[in-house]
Image 1 (cartoon, rainbow, N blue to C red):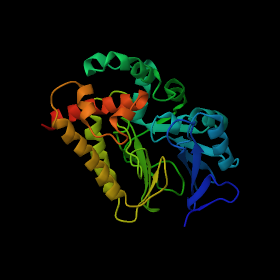
Image 2: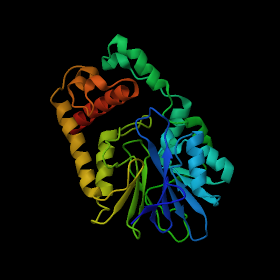
Image 3: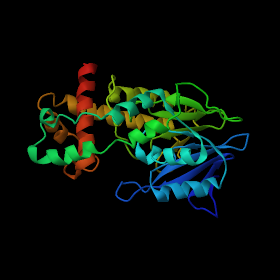
Length: 312
């Protein structure tokens, strides 16, 4: 059974050579920590998956867990700051390479160049709610410019990471962002899922800049892709909350959630995005949405409308 270190309760051993670090997140972000995973290779080096937020507390927590071990690479499941924010500083300290999926690097370039503000008027957003949404949209999706400069290499679907003594394969899972990835160790029975599949939280979709494909359709395809990896004993290592089993069932539940929402959208084909969004079932209720969460809800409603139209 995995156990927390007596010396550092933030660190948990998953299997020999794999540790989880609970990296604290800034107050007010809704979740107490993100998970970084430390993978030891046969040469005595460490590979860091998702180093966490760009805060001093997060950085110190991760460095304490590393204990001075040489860091060979930093792999990011996706570009959001609670997963990638510490990458640039850690790479500068250690000389480690920083790797993302090739589609995520393209998304970073778009964000760093500056994304256009959402067309709130076209969405039918009341005038008194537009300032908060414009303010939320002005906050970068991640520390894009700094991260884009720190990335030294890209990964593609199916490639094995350069980890001596370990077979960790890249599984492209677009949806949450356009270039999100998971990492599969078939021999150890582990799948690092980032924010693609969380044990209880429904991740937002389309949160990595514009894509040519529909994020809802991408996400459903990606859920099916990782569900097929679970033969009953696969252990999921998520980006938040705790490791879990039953990945196939969780993927099924997430797919059902989005298909229900698509059906709700299909039942209200007319009106604006705002008017449609108000009719949908939101976890905390429509009235509780504000700022970023409201913006995310409207974006997802727009994506679902497009998904429904494409689905016919």
